Length: 111
Image (tube, rainbow, N blue to C red):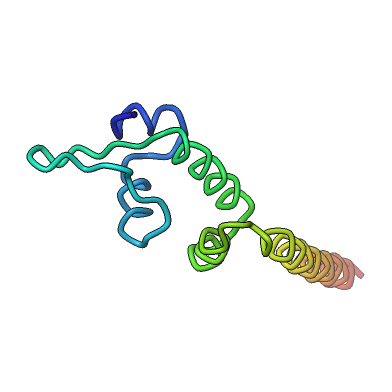
């Protein structure tokens, strides 16, 4: 088992993030010492923490991450990743159109 500080170093998730994830039910410690309240994590927690870090890096919201974690088979993960990809592609298209609008506006100002 890993103390929170060790676990934080291993996973790259800050202690504050670990506390928050525990508070919202995303990643709870496997054991909390009854007297000193130290939080402990295990190897299974490590894998889940890495997954959460990756999902957060991909722009998943807390609610989306909860959906993934609630489906222990991770059956919905591929579906959610595809949906996220489609949203990002749509946003990229919109941003590209904005860039083109800016270019046109700048061009018209020079003429």
